[in-house]
Length: 512
Ligand code: NAD
Image 1 (cartoon, helix red, strand yellow):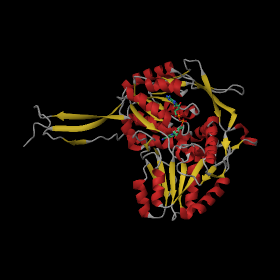
Image 2 (cartoon, rainbow, N blue to C red):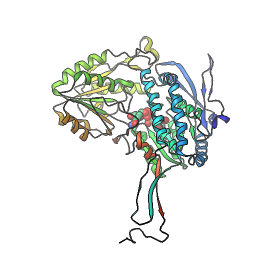
Image 3 (tube, helix red, strand yellow):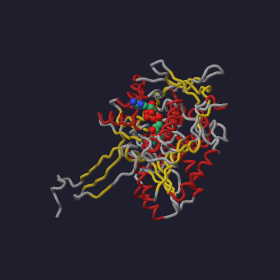
Image 4 (tube, rainbow, N blue to C red):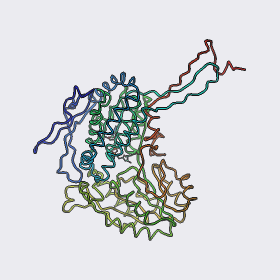
């Protein structure tokens, strides 16, 4: 176990000095060789310095990959059910530490406690699910076309896997990547988002405490160009799993292709919710509020376009605006807050820029649109939940991912037009429809071109045992969650055993 050789994960701070967090490489908690660090601050109150993290570079990445490479030689040979026992223990420990880790996450990421508890719970669920996979990892056994010959396919691990993750689900997304990779027998180097390193650090810490052997999991914190790029380019890395923006994903995919690395990309979204005339309007309004403003709209699956059939357009909009005005924006640590801050100043500026773009292009601002700066808001990146109506599908606010609490309401003539508008977009992650008409629900399930479709629920709320991912510019065809993750982190090997004691030539020696 690595814990025999552990150095300190964190140098505890004092009233005047913040905590200093270390990288985890080859079973040791270590400083970056660059000698540089960066600050992690609370987006709800930037006076709150959460900690100092290592600003890693290529030599840290090289050390982490070398450790993972060495560890792979042993880890791949440990029976999968034994590997899974460590994941199972980690699940129990995560559940015990849920409240502490949720509070850490709200402090560094901003989303409200209810949601950060959910984020940690998602890692718990993934850990239990993937621990179960340790006794499955099924492959086919199948009849051979020749007599006295046995045929099967087995899953083999890939080797060193690199994970590069975003800030909006800073424990759940790393868990979707690390846990299936580990149970399949791979070793890992993870580079979390620079805005939220602590939650990923907490996940790695749990794995270490659960007994993960030295070098099997490594965390290198830092920035994309300095730590992410050398990880992605490293010749010993066999697979890269990336979740983040479509623009960075394009670079990741292109770079990985040059050295034939397996590459899974989970990218942006611009997710539609359709509300038909026959919908339960109260339910649709409730769902729209949660889908659009949950996580301050900073979800890849956020409901960012609501396409409403003309018969209920006004009634739906009036109710939605009335409810949105009552949402309480505030620090996520306050249990009465509904909506937290933007992750950082750049994201807030971008959200406000989209508000200006919507106004300039002629959409009608129904509510919100402003930064909140007075009183308690002064030290954070807060804005009002914002709704635009009379949005034309060609406007920027109807086409581009905003990743903030801004939703575009679009009127449609009928069901067919609503589906056409929903699909008329470069992304295809999540989608939803509110209707009581079972026939239309099934047509929507077939015709909405997206990786996920919800009936009578908003575009958010994925469960860990089903495939998660999208079509078009949202990804490159892989899926996280469920069996899709196992498929990504293994390679098939077909095995034939000929017990006939003679040469039998496939396709040539055909038994009569
Ligand atoms: P981002 O693309 O800016 O960063 C993601 C990660 O990539 C970070 O760790 C960053 O440091 C790293 N990175 C940046 N440039 C890099 C480079 N050149 N080489 C290697 N690594 C690099 O995204 P973000 O702002 O952290 O997250 C928001 C985006 O993530 C949104 O577009 C959102 O839709 C998307 N997202 C998608 C999903 C999904 O499953 N489809 C889930 C969550 C978030």
